[in-house]
Length: 270
Ligand code: SF4
Image (cartoon, rainbow, N blue to C red; front, side, top):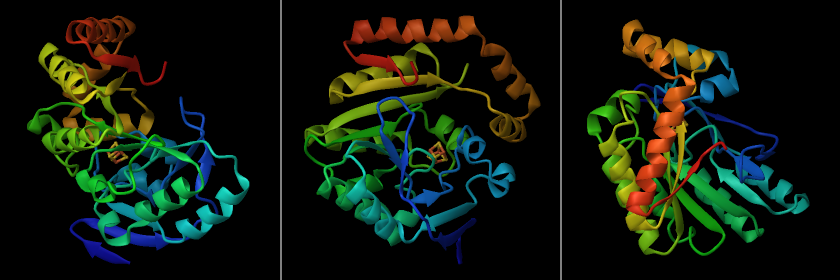
């Protein structure tokens, strides 16, 4: 176990690497890490994992599945190839990956065994693996919640800045890799304004990326963290704004803007 900055890194062993997925468009998921150093304050993962250490402090513990390659190699021999979400409860391209290269080995094994991969990340570290991420069996998504640096530092304190993600998206698009933008979570009064929507959809148009969008969903652990990080007043404002009319209104605005801009958009969770 080692300590770098404020993050504790550990190595763990896993019995399986691929899990069946019920997420739209995905047959399996793979997550080389448990925990995520990007520490986004809106992250749903602690609510999904329900692990005690993540409940009070998200972003401070990262576990690397050191034997993921062996576990995956065993599994791919007996599973039917399908689309793998890479990753769904962590960002596989967080800083620890630079050292361990678990994501890279996982990609090699999946593609060699005829699985397709749908990536989602906030990190330009994925560019390291451009030599593998090519062709029709991959798509690359960058989460772009806003283009505003202050928004990003407030809500995604340790993740690469939006401009870095846009550059990553452009690079893959130029290399003719299928790309998408995940625009979410949309947080009332923070990243739902006309300018943000127009800017994100213009980037999508320019890079031939589709946009998947979704509003913030207030889950219990997430709600507690938002109250602590933002203060109770701001949290209550967000909570009170998230009613059906708001959601319908912001989704209509995205649809209207997409027609003006000529970008392709769809709800992330229809
Ligand atoms: S990058 Fe994704 S998994 Fe990591 S903290 Fe942010 S939202 Fe959660």
